[in-house]
Length: 353
Ligand code: GN1
Ligand code: MG
Image: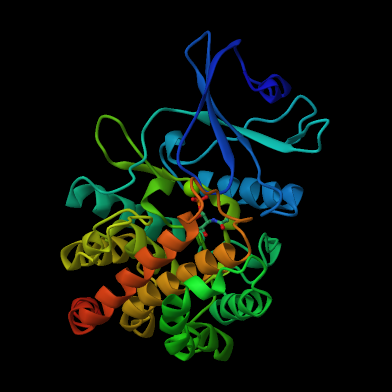
């Protein structure tokens, strides 16, 4: 049993504790209690989230805002206060914990049906819509420059210059691929800065496995993992869902021939996202394919940076894991490029609706 659970105001005696989910950053446990009530206990990764108290202020503000907009209490997360009333507990080793009620439901690593993927798209679209009137100025920036793609490239350049563990020699092809696309990858950030596309309050980590689906109906209950809710671009929220959920293989597949982008799934998600969120401008809709490509390049450069810096950021299961992830993302980019015109035709059919 993780002792931290006893520091939260849960209503019944904890019985079991199991590692839960597949997050790459935090440490997550499912706690089952005597009464049958279940809780998620999470240890926040403070190497990644340097200001956990501010992070929890964001998460609580966002969930409170959403709870005023939903008809069903299961459609938003309910955080449990610690014994002192705060929404986190700091243990004697200065590790930060939080806890929320778990009402059941499940997350998918890949859509099993189109309907699953459509549901997740509506959930993320709706999330965007629910936060459209959230006062963005109240949000702390939990990870500065999180989806600032030029800044991610800048960090890659630093990692290459330093080459701290002599790994650059193994990744020349991957580096070349990324650098050939550096200009294009920075264009969304530049459009945000010039005001050509709006800055919105976005989720910023819209993987399919961050959506909780109802066990019985398979309808989306709510969106999880609110740590990166910050001002950002809808293009990245859309794009990250495509990168993860419209891919034909997991993000760390070794056999690159298995990795491609499923155009049909791309269309399903486009429809769902725009059904959930009505406020995108035509310019944003037109740029959705670029959102998918940019976020995939950005994550590839983050994985590669982490590989060059000896894997201190993402959890890894074996020594080349971040390199394998990089290659899988680049293969996905390559396939998007091959399908570029078709992706455009799809999104254009949704413009002006
Ligand atoms: C991390 O923890 P998880 O798996 O939901 C990461 C995302 C990446 C993702 C890649 C805070 O998210 O940005 O896209 O891994 N989160 C953070 O799987 O860096
Ligand atoms: Mg997650």
